[in-house]
Length: 250
Image 1 (tube, helix red, strand yellow):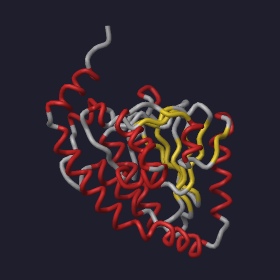
Image 2: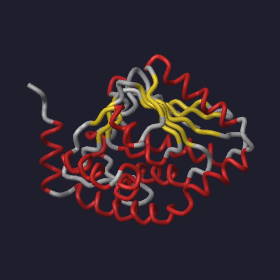
Image 3: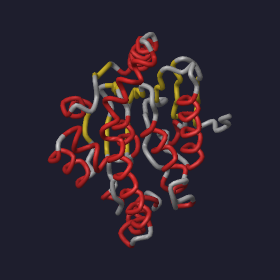
Image 4: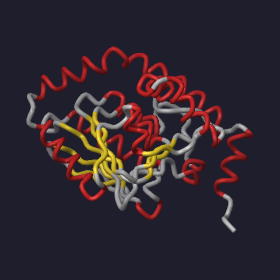
């Protein structure tokens, strides 16, 4: 049972998984990764759950890793909290939906590549700044992102690490629709409720037909990314980047 106040899980036919650390723009700690992985795996195995929906809080989806916590609890293998969540996302057999308002940085963007439907507000801002931190792409994004948006656009986003807008994400095919922020969660919940009325076995079979052909390739990509990511964490480039990021602002 989840006891982390930074992760709110609303069980039901549509299970809601909420980033709930607004003072840190919902930056993710190791404990949060564990809670989300456990919650998603529980939803996967519960026949009463038809759909899972990720949402943020207070105008933010998630700022990605809490870097201070990340350095204290670095991933070291496939059972590390962050990799457990990525694997839960990769293998989730039911419709997976996200409602993105505000910042979606790092995993906040790459996790969307595992979602079947993504809705965002007009103020959503996406970013994959791994190279800027001396790191490399994760979450299967080295495989999934160029297939979703094209190699040239994926290279630009991953190499420069610059933020891109809701409209850019929609034009690239990463999101289904842009919805006013005040209506976003209600819209996503309504879409999930509509999915929950569909024949569940047929819906899961449809997802398997869509996702199945690439599942092994994504698994291979994630393993390669994970090994490189862990190795890069101790590199001089990453250490210097983290030091700059965490230095007190004056």
